[in-house]
Image 1: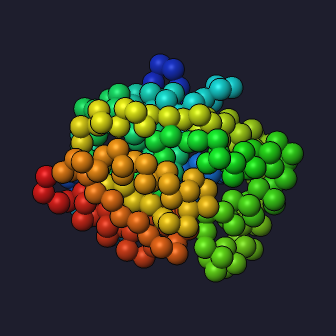
Image 2: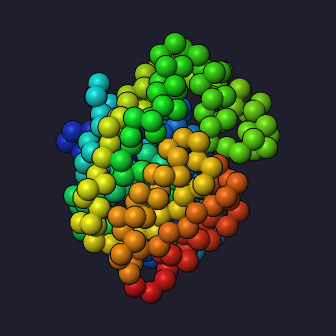
Length: 269
């Protein structure tokens, strides 16, 4: 059965999301930057997270539908918070992947009542210039309208070589469906990462945090996760786990990733 795509509407914007699962507790997933919306992969996401669906009702949010010309991560977080409130979501278990983790950090800092526990997957609290280079390359490909080059670069950077080889033809097929509007949207969302920095504010996070990184992260670099760890390590409610060999998108490729989320979100404070 296909997962329906729903829309939450506020006075300022609308935002698509989908939900699945039958658990009493809300779990929100904020996906990372992508060329095309994760809304088109709702069934695949529900299948991947089916082991959590008995414990949680799982919400997966897109970014707002009507993007302004400039849309930094902090504004993404502000709009996501408004979507949470419109749906009466609070004290959620929150998983943010890559750019979604940046949004999650701002939510935890500026809207702490919304976040009960938080997992950051392959994310960053401070995107330095050298950590933006891969994303800048993607922006350049999108501006030139090179759909195949963009999808192949995306896959090559986020996946280990064997996984990239396995998905190469699927990536090329997806590239053929990318519209001009999707390229323009991608550029705005990718540019929103530039200069992101909340590292000096991390001590203000109130909720338990698990940071999950990858030593071979070719997008943001393992140092991005380690910087979060250095800032939060003194806290007894902070946990760190680093993968080896699964690439930036370990949240898609590591077979035990969902089980790791489940253990953290259901553990005792």
